[in-house]
Length: 113
Length: 112
Image (cartoon, rainbow over all chains, first blue to last red; front, side, top):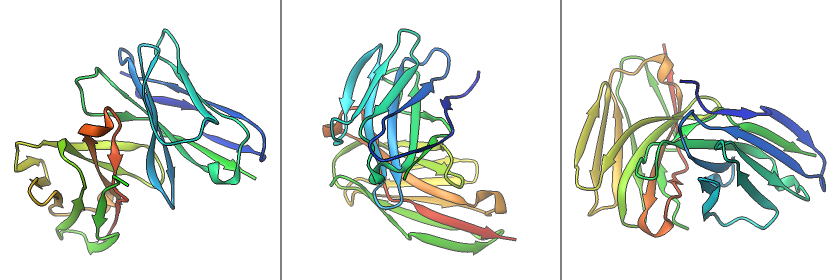
């Protein structure tokens, strides 16, 4: 099976712009989670989607949003980018809600200038 | 914050030596997982230990869990240069639903 894929892998944006990141889970996986990783805060949970429904949301401002499509692919959007949004954004999928192990993609490195 | 703490933050050893990393957490848990991350890439799941287990082995990995002390340790035996990476503990806190809470990580450097 192909692993979790994320596009793009690298992105440079300017403050105030918006950005959309994409994640394709492992085939058959219906749960997709997003995490932000920064040197200062470490890995922080953003949100999880299952069957197109957001099941859980982390402590991030409303500028961070996401969605999941019927094919389980997920997108994450950040509006009005700030310098502090520079981070590695990781997507993870799992096979079912009863499965604890998460499979991570390679991440999207976002740099905001 | 529910974020876990890991100790040490950085560890440098020679090939063949054992590496031990510790993780402390703050809430009751169903299970605790360990992940590895190579140089800013995606995380790879290493091992999961359930709250009713005290020790678990997988190849060169040995994980212990002490729920009374809210702590876990990861031991990598006979380290190799390829083990150089950051290691994170993560847990699914009961109160946090489905979100994984990660520790700050231990950066392991194994030199040949």
